[in-house]
Length: 240
Image 1 (cartoon, rainbow, N blue to C red):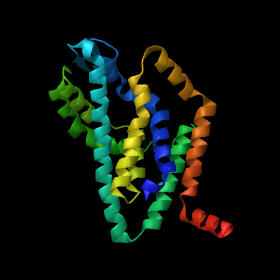
Image 2 (tube, helix red, strand yellow):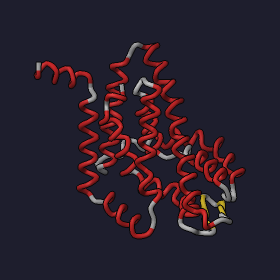
Image 3 (cartoon, rainbow, N blue to C red):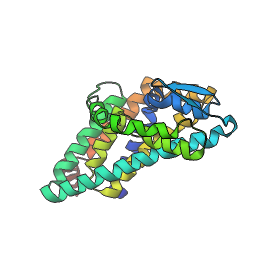
Image 4 (cartoon, rainbow, N blue to C red):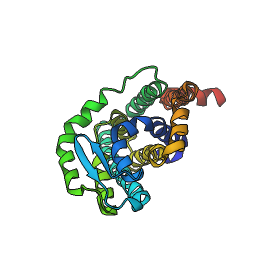
């Protein structure tokens, strides 16, 4: 169970943290409208205006709360599907191997050695046209309710990183485990989404350092290999 595997939660956090520069590119305009005291920001040819610039920290936090809430809801949905699948097929070991492979692919992506998870962006693109119109009712963003609402909508943006995390979470065959993966993934994106100015630049420089990304990628690849049942069984035989 994921509750006994802190390395899985660490991997989810690292995935969100190191992928947060991508998050800023996808929804940074909206975050700027809420968090950088900017009156207007253009997001996908739409203008979002905040008439209460003095409340920008609250709006920014509310936006991110909504976004991470959507991640957790998505984790719940895929967790239910993964749990049902594991019960029907009695293929828990197979799911563990697939989860390990996803971890390895995401580790390769974070280290910028292989972008094998790009295909997942197409999955979200099928769903996004049905969800995106819901965001109109929360614009312009003037209240905490608006910020939470637009955050929940933007949480379903067709981002390859998010949908890769969802595929990985679905393979945990645990409803609570899948939600925790998405929660920690969302928490990993917060440092970049909540900082601005010098701190954002310093954080961005750290994330872009090759040694940092390579180290995190190798760590995630190691976690992926360790999650293979045959590897754990072999280790137990060695130490016993």
